[in-house]
Image 1 (tube, rainbow, N blue to C red):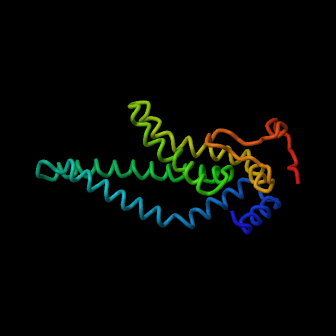
Image 2: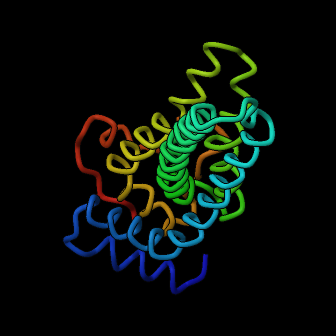
Image 3: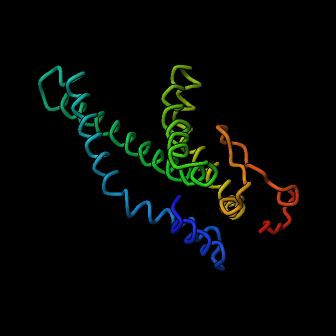
Length: 193
């Protein structure tokens, strides 16, 4: 992390902004940077899904009814894909912010985000019915979990970046590093200088 990023974070921590406002600004910056590429990828994926369905199942019987049935099915699959894609983006964004705060470097944060939000859910459908349910629910759970963790621990974790002895999380995402006992009990704690 470069020194200008650290000084910007330090200034943000000293302002009277609420954590929710800081996080909203981060999400807006992510949208400004990545919205157009995500929309392009989503459009290309939708075209690919439509083409794959047409090549795999196609319209077997000639006629208007068979074509309308195919279009309706393809439209339903594309709508389901768009909903899942948007939920996945939310999960990646919020989990990425969380891992960005509590990982040692950017590459570790990126890898952990990709693994926990994208790769792990792809492996879950191998568990059949429970796995498919987890595959659908996972991005929502990742989004809610990361957002709650950020709202609760943002200032402490961001402050840890300025303490040289601050130990950050390992590979498990459910652990908040070095959380003082007073902070766990809801009391405010002043970070050492």
